[in-house]
Image (tube, rainbow over all chains, first blue to last red; front, side, top):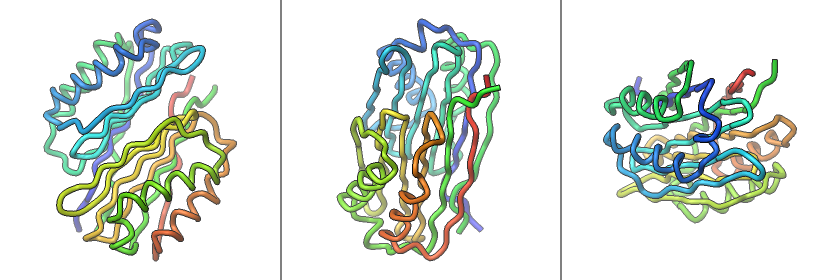
Length: 115
Length: 115
């Protein structure tokens, strides 16, 4: 039995509402997170909602990173999907969490594709 | 208590290996799936791996759709992330499943952001 995809779902609560509503900062933070985790960025697309919130994805060689922010609730949903589990996600997640000043967080690992 | 994000993780097994290795077809299929589910596409980015496999994301007004394919295993990981659960994902997932000729599938619903 082999697992093809490794997905990490992260919840960040109590974030700085101004920071998580700034699409440039959110994009910069994800790209730096990718660099820290040693992931290769293919491209990124970030979208600022009207009136509030940021939604975006970084496509990486190893799969993707997705983010959705709800500044009005200080909440960020962050997902890493990678094709193996050898990446340094822990340090990248810590960096993102600190940048957004999250007060609490939780994470869940999901195995995708059992062949 | 309110749930901010609704994530549906879908596993498709036994897919047609030629179809899930065709990035144009994969993109067209996701865009049609988004249309069926009544989701508003912001943009999409698909990436073909060398030598095999497709990885991509469609950013929608309501969040995102992500796909990663492993033609060598006939496997597709498909994710819908939406900001509410009023969308017709069932029909969209059925359409994608049929297009890729998946023999078996399973899905899991995850609530994101409890505030």
